[in-house]
Length: 292
Image (cartoon, rainbow, N blue to C red; front, side, top):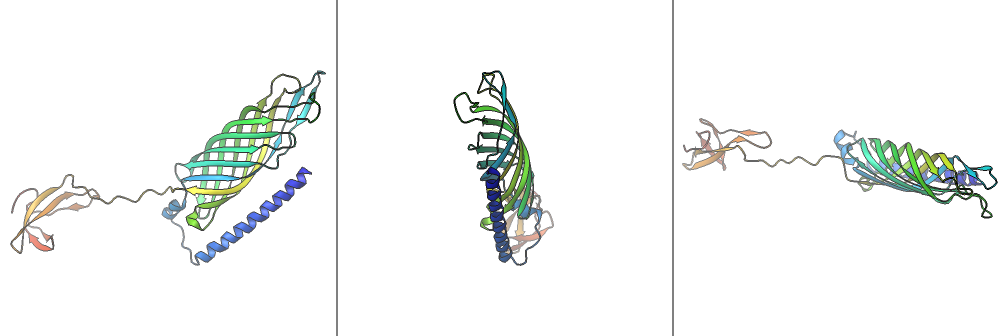
């Protein structure tokens, strides 16, 4: 029953994603009939500094807890898939390709179990025009509950307990062509997760769990900032410059600067040189401070 429900949910999500991507692709084509090839500068401008992801998550844990019972016989209980969950993450990129990430996922309503994970780690991406592929590796903790057996109090019931978790995975992001590429869609994120939980030696509620989990996620992506460097500052500095006096054709003296500007462009008005000062033609200056 749960497998059929998940299959229906998966088909619905995939159909919705396909329609959404098709519509946004048509909008992108209509907005620019002759797109130009992207340059590294334009890619940097459209590549985000920070990403926030929020979406739906499905998880399929595979593991067994050997639970001690009063009779002295251990009962093996298996974890079941959790069809409904939520996931959110924040990534900050140091450059175009590498960043740090924190992530939280909550899957509380399983058939006989539940899990919440909080982790942090490193993320790598390869951005192209309109899309980005990423992989990440995270470490953190899991709050794991179950598996539980409904019924009288003597049936095995494992309360929520914390343990370590590891996550490795990747996915594909699609950037919408509107709103200056501020929004996107995480087409898919596929992860492998390892959980360990020690429920203790007590009967009914004890045992240890080593769980291998497969997790699939999709949802909305919001971009902030840009990795493009700020525009250069062309303001010139007068440090190290020398001033001199020149004689202009109208009989009035003028003042010129000889030295090195901040942007590396030199300005020299030395002896036997001519030029314009304040719109007047001037001649014969002395390099350095002094009078004609």
